[in-house]
Length: 221
Image 1 (cartoon, one colour):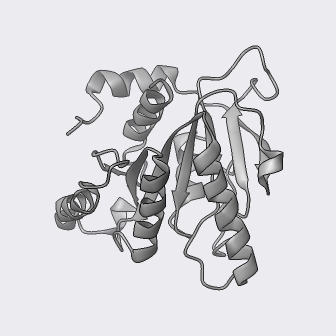
Image 2 (cartoon, one colour; image 1 turned 90 degrees about the vertical axis):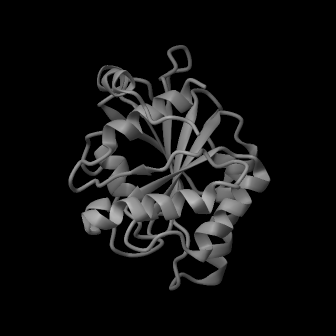
Image 3 (spheres, rainbow, N blue to C red; image 1 turned 90 degrees about the horizontal axis):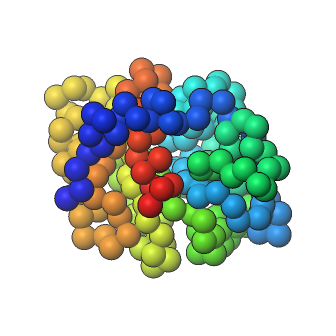
């Protein structure tokens, strides 16, 4: 098992993780992808898992990633880079963040679902600069069938991913160790899964420094 980020790792993330970020591009299809440049980390998860809220909390900028109560609202790959680096080919940022369309939505037309799915997994399979996917799981519900389907695709594509529990503050404290254990057990035999499970709350700022440290470590790997 890989150990959790050390206290030094977490301290380093306070000083080395960029706190000012810009949105640079929404990508509705592969032909609009920006050129490969800095290492990228991507956030994936079921619709309404709290993905945009967590990205906003991690970068300490409300409204950077658009949040919505409407499942399936994020329909593009949205790219974010540290402020001052947008469009700069000579001064690459330490990493870029990609907000991926949510999956598992029930109300969107099938054609839209198919298009979004094709876009997402074409990106996953073909992006050399993608270092890790952070797969968000709602701590109130645990790993669902469509989460496992996404894990299957990530394993098949050999894309490294790490499970991040969201909304950890919404379950009773006594249930947190059980949720950790159940989630870790679901991924322990998956070849592309990073063994450490992270737990976060964007509302209560829980686990954000650990996630930042993990993102920096992945970008530098």
